[in-house]
Length: 364
Image (tube, rainbow, N blue to C red):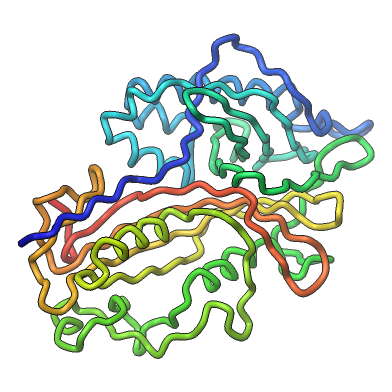
């Protein structure tokens, strides 16, 4: 009897509407120095960007148009949201309003420029804080929201440091300084932490754990080398209470078909920039993303006996291919204190599926 497994897209959306057209809250500085060149983004500018983003996101949500979404959202956030927009139920999602914004604006006299803001949402059962990271490549381009990690439960949030003019202090992504790891080294460290199995021996796409030699030949994958532990030598342990989307989905499949489905996960760094703000304890609050892929294949003797349903990525009952691969993007805000050893803590996270392939080709 064919088995069907359904996994929903676990998205912690920051969908917003703007009813009053105004923003109230606090800002970390004006973005201006006392003397010298003018800043390309001030608190007033950031307030306007946030207001326009809320209204634009609400418009895109109800229109279900990714072309509208692309005017306000970029990077991995666009990839996650554009995929979710294929789900018609998204249009029925009630608008949510941001409140209590706290702007973190480093002084910048030239482009590209960026700033972060922490906001609160409370509507239709949603009561959460989010970080939003906006970037602008040049004076002629638009501000885009590229990261939007959701604060994890009651996770303590670091306090952002300011300079003598009240501006947030940016940390160079490539410089460790007093940190154990430079901010742009954190993504690779977390990818290693999340993947407890070494890459496949001989290169190529790794086979799911437990794959037989015969099935590996059929799938065209490479059997994995002996496993290592996630906390092995040289691995930085990340402290968090997050529910990372691909790992959540994997646990669903494991709980419902562990003897019938072979599953493997891989996380990797992306080419997206890493952004970091100095915290008052001398550490940094770092924003970045990872890509992830999950490959699902029938275990020995179960070929063709199950189908998988990811809304609008893989459709239940229509895919009986030898393997399925679902790709994800996942965003993080990580608090890294100064000093050694490295003790990064994930304090906010957001993610979702972005594409899928079936049997090595497009899904039906």
